[in-house]
Image (cartoon, rainbow over all chains, first blue to last red; front, side):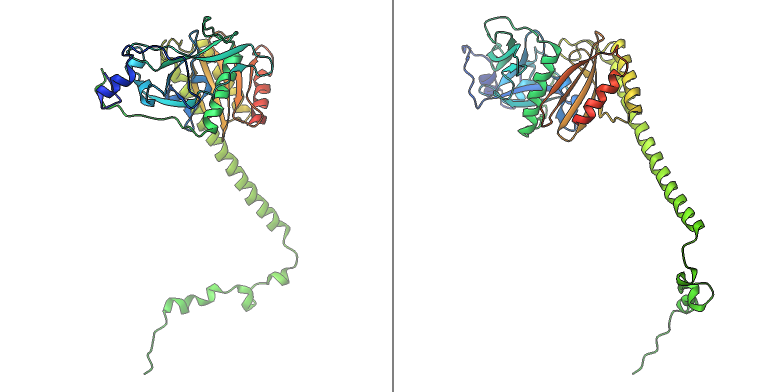
Length: 172
Length: 180
């Protein structure tokens, strides 16, 4: 069930897996969408301390298979409706490939990890080898912060202000 | 045909009052007075000083209001529950206490944070902003403190703050204020 899209058939065709295989190739022109708590915007821009970074990397949706608002759908939030969220939008080349720049300890790659109801789901995968076949691991606090800082600086310099969407359908 | 227009009586009555008394020789002119009186200079100084004090008072009030709001924001974090963000712990008492202590120090340093927010790494963050540049000091639930600066021309900087050191937060603010 969609709460941000009016056309349910189109929504299901776009966002549900519908038997599609994983697509490991990300286009350079693709955008990534990430939900973000509205209360953590300062002067309209996201703050680094609200970008989650756990042992499974950073979850995003890819634009080739979704619209920005789809990332707020319960289908893409483990079945939960999350209120008070906006959508961050950034390019696939907007996050650093490795950090720290001078002496890289961690590498960041994109991995398509589709869900049955959220085919667009992908992860910014990180580990010291930069290998998406190896387990993802959480970098040190300093590296996490540098990653967030680099990403947010790119988002802001590109003028990609966070997007807000209105609920259209019933919220369970 | 001539038209008689009555002049307003009030104007005729008050016309003299708009003239300086020196014109009628009732008081000395500025030329006759010579150098300004020392008392008058002191009076002007006193007025200027008064204005400065009033301005400083309003600045103090503004800063008090700012910090009052930031402390309120910090208190609101007590109500956050675990899982407020996917798999993220709520800020602990330790993190909130350290953030409160930091707010006091920043206030004495005339720093002006823009927000107090929960951190997705578990803890509390005090945020600073100047145009496109951002700074934050985080107090994590495990007792660690970290600072981050970004958005400026010299690139991002991240470092751990050793709260055990005297003046650690003062030094951190010095670095943040230079960056911002």
